[in-house]
Image (cartoon, rainbow, N blue to C red; front, side, top):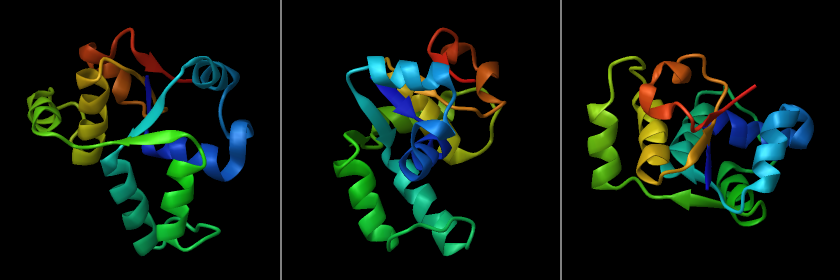
Amino acid sequence: MIVLDTHIWVNWILCGEVALSPSVNLAMKSEGILAVSDISCFEVLLLVKRGKLELPLPVDEWLSEALSNSGVESLPITCEISKRAVALPDIHRDPADRIIIATAIVHDAKLVSMDPMFPNYVDLHGRLIGK
């Protein structure tokens, strides 16, 4: 399984493969399961509400299409993921990013992100896909 960071998921759905690097595209094509944390849906809703993201459809429709038609599954935020997110070192203070990181760790999944802070997490060594 590969967990997609919110920006990767949104850019891939909106712009297709050209929005991602060849190595990210290859990793995503060769993996059987692509997923996002439920917190990514929250982030998309918040970005649209704040006017920082424009979508070609109403946000509810876009989220439905971005999950069902893309083959990306949504992973719930469990108590285990919440505990793991809180236990992470304070490298990245953004709670959404901490939940995304914890989701990948708890599911023993790879994580695709271009966030420059993510490589600083020892728990992501060997599972982080970027650039």
